[in-house]
Image 1 (cartoon, rainbow over the protein chains, first blue to last red):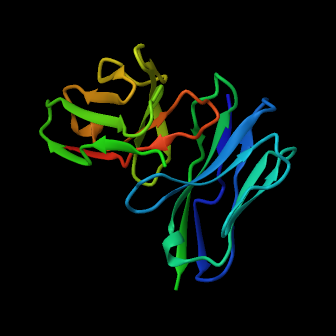
Image 2 (cartoon, each protein chain N blue to C red; image 1 turned 180 degrees about the vertical axis):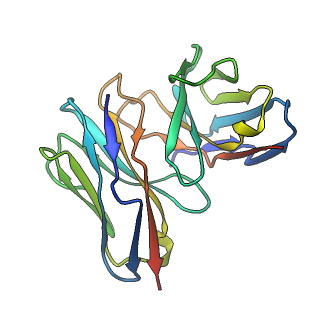
Length: 116
Length: 116
């Protein structure tokens, strides 16, 4: 079974600075997807960024980018120019590819605080 | 983008009551729907996966007679918490996916269930 580990229960960053959230995973599969979800106090799950394992290029979405290291099974999220609205719980998630890969496996989450 | 509507957003009821939570996909056909439970400051725990027209597949440790899931149409799945007790109080979130396995899941806004 796949597992996802987020070793940082809490992180803080000053507004306008950069922060990196860590995520590692364990799998024997070669084809899969990785995601970062944001859950603000409203508790809505918001997809931040997604990475296909077969792509070597790291995904980017505006101020959000990932460092995907397939061999190391590492998938960190970098938030640049942090804003107060970035404060939330961030979850890393894994999903197998293909017809059998529909369920998401979540990490424990990292609570991000943005200080003004 | 794809929208999933979950209703109600909050329920407060007496112990012994059965509570039904609805999850609707508004602009796509949800071949598969997922039900999660989330305790405060914890990750999402998958309870069950349902495919339209089929019986739900429950995760280990989840009582299927306690948490009844119906997915009778491609746009609606319901979770009924039967004879709810205070320990069933939690945040319940649904998500839905279409028949394209490569597309991400779309989440509802969640239901906060409080049993007195």
